[in-house]
Figure 1 (tube, rainbow, N blue to C red):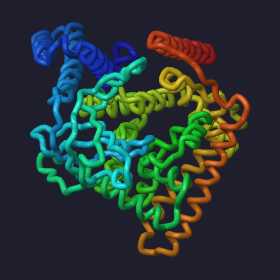
Figure 2 (spheres, one colour):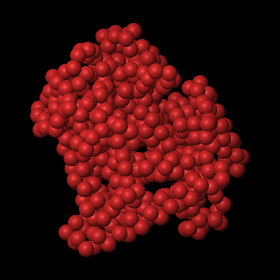
Figure 3 (tube, one colour):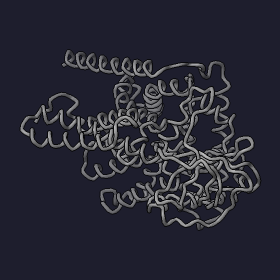
Figure 4 (cartoon, rainbow, N blue to C red):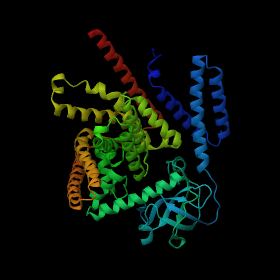
Length: 506
């Protein structure tokens, strides 16, 4: 059966595009268009699809509209869950710390989840800095008396801080004085099962980080190792973070497809003899998801875990395992579970980088001369260059839009960080597997510290090179869209040029 156009080869991608469009429209029109309106429009569009099921074109239009209205409904509902009013006076409440506290000047900032409400709310909190506040950890309970305020924009700032907080699930902000809080056990009965699991995972992550420190890992070596393995980036210094950003290596400090793919590959190797077994694949996938929970469920890691789950499932069916549909399924799962994740910078960069790797890898890889392809080392080097270039083409406009920066030596940087991060992640898994062999675990840990130190030194060296980064780039939303239109236009043009050349050769 022939498809009517290339887009029909990717049905899930079309669903995601209209769902995302609906999320944007729903968020923009929040307060103007109600959730009830979006829900009624969704029901009407589904009835339209059912009644006109014999008309293919009308049914397709109805399905597109249904996904659009679904996105609007989900976005509007998500906004209504966090857009709440608070009393003007001081209130008492019990809460749980749900993010690693960060020292900023005279305050210690963290996220609190109110646990004594019928509907738990997430609050961005600033504790007046003292010894007790500095010792707070994710998962700790606190009893507080403070004024809760709705998110507001900073005076004389162009950044829409209010929308940022609402889009990331924060219902309010608060400042807590030294005498207005104390640490105390907090009942979690009002929280959902998922929230309780996440808090338990955060506590377990704290235990793992403590063990890492107990093994003698400290300083920025510990900071990078904690970020790469457990998603804990609090300890990274501003200077080192800037070096990773300028050199184009910031992605290795965030849990993403690279990290989870290495872990997935190592776990799959353990079950190599049973790789076609449903039980073996299920165990591997469960282990990957357990790791994502312990890391705090960052969006990039969730996307990667969903893709690996789909990859694992289709591998049992001997189907194409890496495609636009696989990526679209991952996006669909993330957006349905958390619609406002669409506005998360990590979500956007994660999906765009994988999208461009899928689109550009084969065309760019095919540019390698046939004689060179016969040399394994050359194939490996060229493959790394192709992946780096493809991902950079995708994320560079977003980096320029959000951070005003372009990294000029990203290819050179990847030759340092990708092999090093591969060794680090394999070493961390090995450390976990040999927990019953302390002296060998200590040896592996010492090797990992050396590798991390080498990677940090390499990244700092690249960042220090002349012209390592171009700063001060200013792109607005329209210009960003035009850049991507231009890039996709060049991709389509190159596709047809290659197709015409192939037809001439045939």
